[in-house]
Image (cartoon, rainbow, N blue to C red; front, side):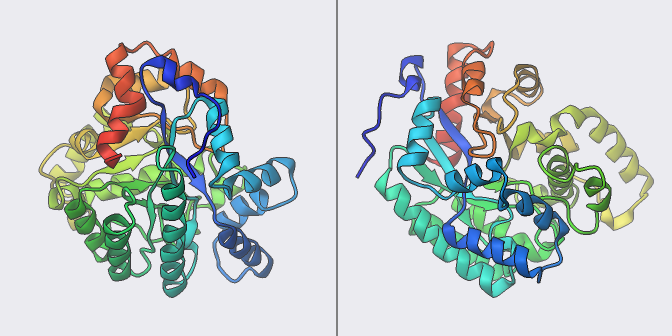
Length: 353
C-alpha cells in the first residue's frame, strides 16, 4: 500500500526533492557482513575497518544498521521529516562485490528482486538502482538487463573497486556497453581503498568517508577517462557522489598534465591519446550529486564549472541523515528554474523516473 504519512515540505517549494544516493542493506547482507567480520575469510582491510565500526556496538553504528535495513515506514517517516519526496535506493558498499563471483551474482539477483518489490509498494516514494557483481562480467550484464527491462530499476550501482580491480580493465567493458544500450547510468559509489593503497589511510583513520572514499573513487573515475572508456562508449553516463570526489576542482590541471603525459609518451599505451581533453569527459559523461556535501560554496563551484544540467541533489541516507542540510540546499543562490532542475528534473531525466 502506498504510504499515507504526513505532508512533505517539498510540495511548497515548487519542486519535488529527489534524493539520489540513498543506501540500503538487506538483512541478509548485514548477516553476511557480520559473519565475515567474525571469520575474516576475505583479505580486505578496508571492509573490516568500515563495517567493523558500523556493525559494532557503538550507538551510531546500531542506529545506522537499524535504519539502513528498512524500506518501509521508518525510511518513509525519515524522508517526510527531512522533506524528501522520493529516494533512489541502492545496496550499500561494498554490496555484493565483497564476495566470490557466484555468491555475488546470486545475491545481486535476490537483492534486486527485493528492491523492486519495495518500489512496487511505494512507487511515488522509492526508485532503485540494480546491484551487479562485476566479478562475473557476463552475468553482471545479464542481471543489469533483467533488472532494468523486467524489474524497472533505473541503472546500476558499482561500489568502486572489486577485490582491487577497476572497471577500466577491458574485461569489464561489456557492462558499459549494456548500460549505454539500455540508456541507463552507472553510479560509481565509493568503497574504502583497496589493500594495495589503504595502509597510509588506516594509519591515521582516514580510510573511510573522511578522505579515503574520495581518493579511491576519484582515482577510479580518472582511470575510466584515461583508458578511453568514453571514446569507446560516448553516450555512457557515470554518476559520482560527494560533488565528484573533488575532481571538478582539478579540471584545468588534469588537462594540462595529461597533455604533457601524452605528448611525451611518458606512460606509453597506459595513457593513450584521447579524442578530447580530460575535462570534456568530466563535463559530458559524468553527473554529480551532493551526497554528504551539503555545503553551499562547494555546490556552487560545481554549478559554475560543470553546469546545472549535471548537478543533482542527494542526502546520503542514512550515513549522513542531516535534515538541516536540506534547508541549506533549498536556500542555494539559484534561480527557481535551476533549483527545480537540481532537486527534481535532472534526476527524472537521468534515471527516467
